[in-house]
Image (cartoon, rainbow, N blue to C red):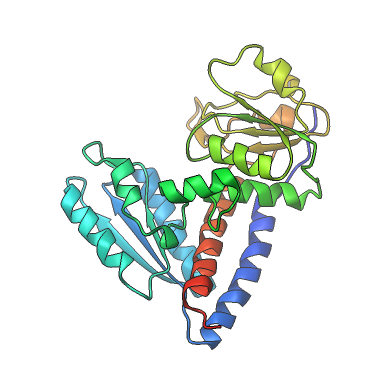
Length: 280
């Protein structure tokens, strides 16, 4: 079963070239976009993500600041840092790397970020704006998925879009963004009955379930656009996605959605700088 293959790295490279040009334009007007990333604890995957974000900022000329805090950082200390960053004019985006240690209330921490600097779009105000379709920021992974779909030339209007996974980070916002593109959306999860029957209807299939090799060729409609959001380790310890690559051939993992997620974060930071600081 052969699906359309999407080169996520190539799409991300094109987007970053455009962002670099936008960043240079802003710098010509005395504005350097600024991103602050807060990492609490020593989660290995989070450390990799944060390093990649810092490296991407350097490549595009975006000012970045990284705050690495110990795992026992108190609620008061973290909220104080966020308040300080909210008040700094040269910081256009604030990102708190998830997951947070268990003693910190994720909802409280994310709600403390200024919505105008919430480049991850996790603040309840920004989530609400996405629901009604009047938003400035959108979550980075769903935004990256939309860009990958656009790269295929597929118009989502009227298409059957099936999303496996209903997380607040990917599944739910992805469903809303697809609805805003006039797709017919089905969200599947662990309680969904006859899942292969549902997924075989999909013109666009997005898997964000977090299980290696979960989606097989028999679950995919011929010619479908398949986006694999999963980031897993198989029995041999190899990094892989949710989709069985040999039987489906979706956007590859690694190198598919991951580069797009970081690229969309940078895009939101640049947009925030222009929106907040560019004079009329």
